[in-house]
Length: 537
Image (cartoon, rainbow, N blue to C red; front, side):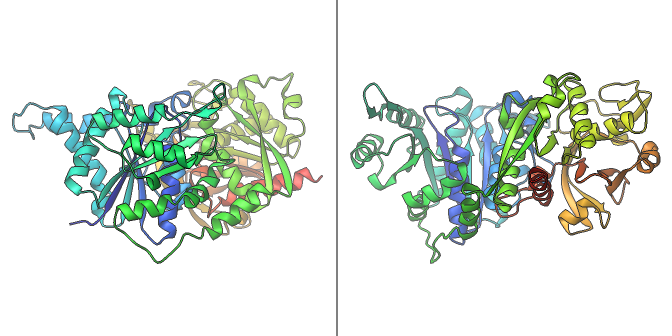
């Protein structure tokens, strides 16, 4: 039997309070104390995964090593803990119901009426405990998406109630994250929203063990006592989470508030180690006190919701800290780049990153951005679709193949330099069917990419259907764009570079998914280094 302890993180009053950051910060502190910790996210929507969701709906879709398309919170978990997550770390209502219905169709319930309780709740509990039963983790933290009181969250809250009863109070606890708003007109903090939120949670049979209160102003001892009294917790179990300058401050704030100590006490665990956060604070020190600044143009199609590129902007922060450099992002909508204004819009930037995406919207703007970077020797980084745009731009303007295109945007392209992958030709379903997860890549010695990684053999995460068309490889290479990274088994081109350019790299994979605080991604580090060099010209 597993001795894993469970911590559940619920949210009340409003969404977007930062349950993921609190969960990741707690996990970081427990990890520093020597415990093996993982975090999972339960999402109450009926999609099987976020893979088919528009980024405007849900921010970026984060991809794990084993090819799961997951919630962007898993990116935070990996960036804080520096350990990979997996398929088991993200569960959606869609996946739960799909599993139960499949079992019902096979007759596994022996003719019973299939109901939310016990069948759906049993499946939720089974999923929650998958990670715990591996024996790899001392503590599993489970973040429950949505807000207490949402209809769609009810089966999850009920599953938590059952697990608290089954595991006992020393083995499973609930942290409830809530809001203590400041009313400027009254000049005071208000506890009533938190009281109502806790009351609603208790009506579902769950009494929180710890309250974490988001606030803009310091919470006084009087308010803590009031919250403790009305919410049925001890005063020391009311933890203040004041607005922070950066999400990377939160582990230190939670350490100051003693969140990790309160959690360990409740779970009856102890450790001789104290969280020192040495490497973390070294990163934070450099991030907050930069000696240089660079401006990077991020060319994307979903820039109205910057969470669509969350992993990229965080990778900039990690790489910037390495060089003690503030990375300022100039957000440019690819649809807004036209032949008449692209030079003005891109003027003065020290680097250009063309971001991933799908579909034909804004493609011409992306191609123009690539052309500007290539012709003006501006450091260029193309990711996934960005790499494909670099190949198309080069084929059009250097090779002279004016009708070079991708069959994703133009099915009957005369020169399909980017083509549908063979393995994708008979795929009709959209969800979870792309080339996903970690794939190997062999990097050419002496290339910019090799110099960044310091290694010939790398593994990176993918999420795409279209690929570089090897029929054009020879003529593209002859003209000066080299394939410097390929998949050793399939020969699929993973990396392209322009050799006579200061820094021009396009990658078919998503390096941003693997950048963490403790291990900034080598390509981002090298790109920012090139941008820094450019800024000094």
